Amino acid sequence: MKYISFVVPCYNSASYMKRCIDSLLVGGEDVEIIIVNDGSTDDTLKIAKSYQKDYPTIIKVIDKENGGHGSGVNAGLKIAEGKYFKVVDSDDWVNKEALNKLLKTIKKQEKTKKNIDLYIVNYIYNHLYENERKVMSYKNVFEPEKILSWDDLGYFKPSQYLIMHALVYRTTILRECKLNLPEHTFYVDNIVAYMPLPFVKTLYYLDMDFYEYFIGREDQSVNEQNMIKRVDQQIKVTKIIATCVDLERVKAKSVKLYRYMLSMLSMMMTISSIYLLMAKDEKSITKREELWNFIKENNNKIYLKLKYLKLSGLTYIPTKLGNYLSLTGYKIARKIYKFN
Image 1: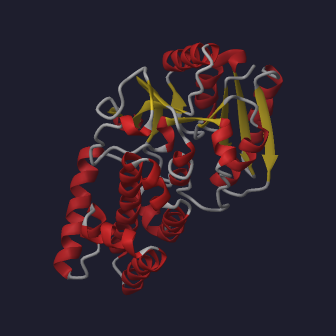
Image 2: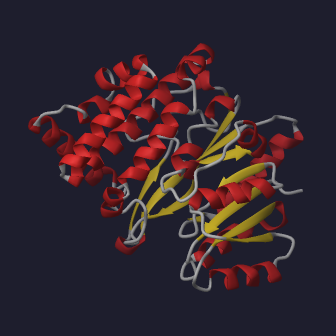
């Protein structure tokens, strides 16, 4: 039995993918590692096939034309056989002791017939080249090692969101919500961390530092200059998040989940608005207005809350002072949280 399917989308990852895969191999026969070669032009496929040869019962390799990170996740999800599903970016890695604890916990819960829909773990912003690490935990939000529902949520701090790196979904949840990520699009991890949530009924938090999120490569999608260049893709993902879930239906089932998802949408609007401001041209200012109008036309009630009751509203004050305050706030947050 495979308890976790790890999907590792790879594009020209030859210089660092071994660190990632070696950390996952600690799971042994309890896991499957699906390496997706997304049209690489380096030795990525050669390395993947070498692992498959050495670990034929653990490693699967998908070789496909380039379609982007989301395409790789989609391909992995199609063939995943594990009870749980976890995406691990090829430049990241997991803590080996934490992986063993997660597997032990999953086995224990499965024996007792407790169906946990979502396991939540801590992740680390790892600035490896600068020898700096910042742990993002959720112990103020979830009571550790207890089966919870959304109604048991505590308070999320402004810096806290359930990003993809912290989440291990039951595979059937992702198939039930019909997760299908857009191709040739960056930042689709936000969809993975948002769209399935209303389908989750039971949660389990392990207060352990599990996922090492590497920060530092110049070609990373979260590099500030790349985010400015790719802001149209950030807008695309924000629009998908704004329309893929009916928040009013969510509210009818769980007010706490509704509040969290509204805050996450606010965060996405904030990011899009900030990077459009950082582009410093009239075309980008027009795009910001168009994005907010899109939200208004799709759901005026949500638009009013985002504009007047949430942080995102502070990034849509169409004056020079408003723009200045928005950018200053972003720079302060970046310095504190080191998220890129």
